[in-house]
Length: 283
Image 1: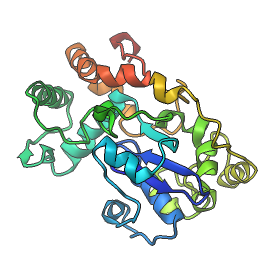
Image 2: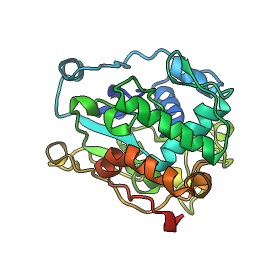
Image 3: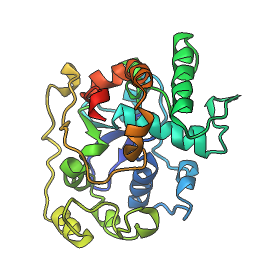
């Protein structure tokens, strides 16, 4: 599922293909879906990426993708995140926290410190690699180029992680993973919730009750989504579950040149997924 479209045999029986990009909450979502299939995972949350699962295809080409999934009518879902926030999160998490030596690409290591000036240098390095047509680490690559995007894959739904209050109940109900999401997550959450996620203004128990009483119809998919390429299920309200990068946007994008460089680099994602352009006066 790590930036590659993968068939997920949902407990509900729905045929669904899901793609989780790095830096969109992929670690926790992967844990949820793996545990919902009864596969034991390590208490170390990051070990989930090393857990062998039988349905993980990691297919790179369109023919193999459709052959593996068997039916082009399978529901297809891709997770996306605000491009500005995702880029900053990648820098802070991989460029700074990981011993300051996380490679922009395999075999290339460049140290960065947690300052706006270093963030600017980081963006300049990414742009230079892009312009040279060189390989990009998937944590920093454009989302629109991941999940088969560069090969022309289309998805029925693009789930904005900022909009989780909008689509969470539908999605969890559709997959039939509500029971697994209901409890056992306190050690993996920063907000202290015992459940995977609690809706705005609701407790874990109240959220679970809503899921139990909800019926998600897998037929309720935009019939034109795969043809028009327009993001579905894409609203613009802000989630109350802010992450670390969200809180530091105004600091790291305060420099006008940095903001312009980032906007230019991210423009394909901004347009593709319907996110607003960040303006200096709005920080």
